[in-house]
Image (tube, rainbow, N blue to C red; front, top):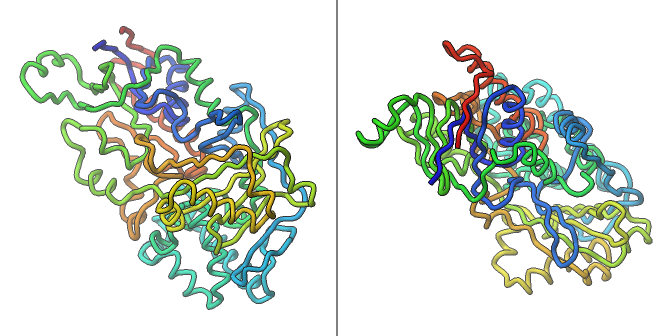
Length: 479
């Protein structure tokens, strides 16, 4: 096994870890990025399935995601708008299919009024709480100890309005049942996007895509870093503060006062470490000495949701011929959301649909053949029988990925956010935390990952500049 000497070792080659590595390297520090998978990109992944290019993971860019937009510009990547011309489809609890335009669903006047009222309440709370520290809101504990499901029903007796509003956060974002996370977690989700109104507006939150796929962000950053990125290298042990399990190792590490990351293929000795993986994977690493009690407790209250991202490619985008945008919603359907996901200048048409939380559980109980039939049947309820016959069909199942285990991002259980949020970014000695799951603005999006990478790099540069006798630009080298 080879050994590397670096200023900073980054664990995880997703957008956050690679952004941090690139910022640090530009500032003069030496880095090593260790990635468990055989590819970079983390929860962004573009692959070719049966001749069709599919974005298996994160893919969208919204206008407020300035950190991501700036990085795309730096990397020379261009975007294109999501197709959304024509009417959308909504299927309500009466199972009737309705065509509509605009942001809000075609519901009764009473339900629409209640939805608008709930959106107003959530916009106010999001503005008051903000994305940086929602746990400081005067009502933080109250909001964090009631589920979003029950909080909505305390605000309104209109069940359709509650279900529709719940869809945007539960199935659409956190991919957990609304009874399993708090109202404060929902407020954070809204604040991270600027407002709840932005989450309701799919034309805003799902504005553009990257030509060629979002994974290129990580691929181009990795290309800049070259041999500093090591794949197929899951980190098994992270020693910090000069600790060692035995006298022999202690003697070998006697001049090292930072961290030692031991992976399957390389050992990296560094001054600082960045854990750039989601919180549910922290426990995959053995920390020597163990992390403090606060960290152990905190990580047990964070978990990822569950979603199946379904891709269906057709010979043509047939829905457009019928004056439809391809955008479809139904809180009651197996496939709660559908969008036109056709690739840039592709004559074929691609739909992407999402099946979240308990509905995903039910689908995974079926055989692959029966699940496909059920999913396409649900899409056909929106867009007609032509939806039953794609030329390519694929299901993204991040819950079965060893180095992810869920989607889209981690959130706290009831009561966890106000209890632990203030400490989630606190370094442990030389160990820092960086991922979209911990972001304020851009939480759970690629933009949040980029922001966290930039912020974490800045924090380490600040720490290095104040370290006695060793300014930030003093780099370690070696292999």
